[in-house]
Image (cartoon, rainbow, N blue to C red; front, side):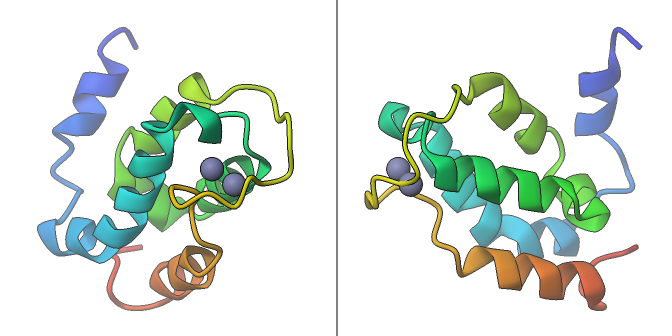
Length: 105
Ligand SMILES: [Zn+2]
Ligand SMILES: [Zn+2]
């Protein structure tokens, strides 16, 4: 179990095209993770919680969501509406990817 995160990073199950499909989602989450004012922002928590409930997305994103949980701070405000906040539009996109054929189940 000690090498869990490393094993996950080189998991051959992560198909390149799956990672390409989730790349836009991954990018907005990583942008918010890099923005300190977003870490206690409710919208980031909601987005990460939503994505974490979608197994195919969790697998395709690798350890990003786990990293987000480690970085995020307790929610202080609903949303600052800042440019770096994850747009709600990524969540329906994630739902479609998770249900569709773009991702290996
Ligand atoms: Zn924000
Ligand atoms: Zn926000």
